[in-house]
Length: 270
Image 1: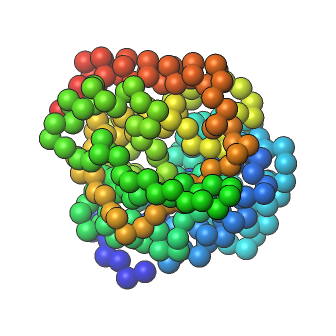
Image 2: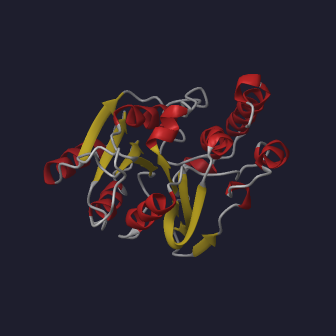
C-alpha cells in the first residue's frame, strides 16, 4: 500500500475498519469474507459482529479468524443490526469506517479506490454506485442519489426531500472519516427494531435513514466516485422485502426520529 498518510495519523492503525453485522447467514458469509480478504488495500481491520446467530455463522467466523488476524469477532446477544453496528464502532481503530452487509460482495479494489479518494480530497464521506444483484442473475445498477451530493443548499433539500422517502440513502456504499463520526457523535438508533430474527441480515431504510441524515447534516465534504460498485444481493426470502404492517411502523418511527432531530435547535444545520 503506497499511500501517504496525514502527519497526525497513527502509523500502525488500519486505514479502514470494515464493520459487518451477522445474523444467520451461513450460506453467504464465506463469499462475503473472501471478497474482503483479497482487497488490494491490505491494511484494514474486519470487525464481524455475530448478533446471536443460531446457525453455523459463528463457526465460519472462527474458522476465518484463524486464517487471517485482521478479522475481529464480537459475539453478542441478538439485538438488531443497529446495535451490532454500534458495537463495531466502539472498537474500530481505522482512520475511516466502512459497513458491509454479511451477504454482499465488493470488487477487489473497492476499498483502495474509496480510500485513495478520501485521502486525496480529505473527505468526510466517500461514496460510490451500487449494483442490485438478484437471485436469477439479473443486475440492476443504481446511480448515486442526488440528495447525497454535497451542496450549499442542503438545509433546503433536507427538510423537503430526505425524510419522507424509502430510498434516502444507504450506509454500505460509503466510507466515513472516523474522527468525523466521533466529533458529531453519529451512531445508529437502536430503538428502530421490532423483534428477534428480523431485518438483521439486510441493510434497511428505517435504520439507515437517520444515520445518513446525521452524516449529511454535518459533513463538509462528500466525494462521489464512479469507478467502482458495491454489489447488493437481493434475496427473494430476505426480510427486507417483507413489507408488512410492522415494517411500515418502523419506517414511520425512522421519519419521526429525523423530524425530532431537525426540530431540535441544538442540531441546526450550519
